[in-house]
Length: 264
Image 1 (tube, one colour):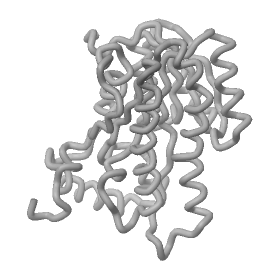
Image 2 (tube, one colour):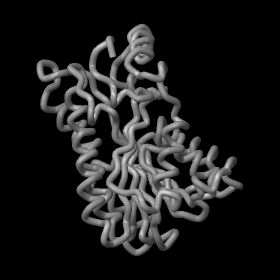
Image 3 (cartoon, helix red, strand yellow):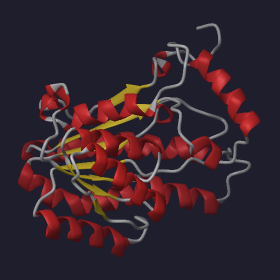
């Protein structure tokens, strides 16, 4: 495995590890020799991911710290269990998040609160609790944002707002922690093959139509793969990125640079 993604021995907490980008990142970090703590709300899926990580990571079992991170006590418990088991924390990957469909006319306040609590508030709180430990190890944080933090959508208002918040959170915290040698970056994926759109309510036909549109809106002509995002997370978390902080890195086939018209 390339030294550019070297993560051997780094104690790494990955949230949203039971599916999607979080799951793919967990497997890659296991292959790279990281010491894993995995969080997710789906305990059965989390156990499956732990077995997959152990199988490809030389038999080392990840520490499972399941739970809903919108609950403040759960956040504190998760971090306490990691420090009790491993004595330190080197990397935090904030991958947990949800997508909802709807604009100002169809997104009620309950939807707003749910998305912002999961996508923003829980990230804020977990990071806050992890920071003292990351300062001790001069560690790094990688947040999973989205191209929708930079590009607008008439049908995903609250999601776009939440990811814009994560982009700004990344930059602000990076500046604050830079004197303490803790790096903070984010990845901003375009459309990636996960279940997030179906969980937001798209049926198979709608999803197929959506993916065809992605071939147009992504200049590289396709949606992305989970592993393409995971590799970028691994790079930003690694010592190979030791002079990179406060970056919101697009992993989107060029979508962030494209004007919002089919003519460009």
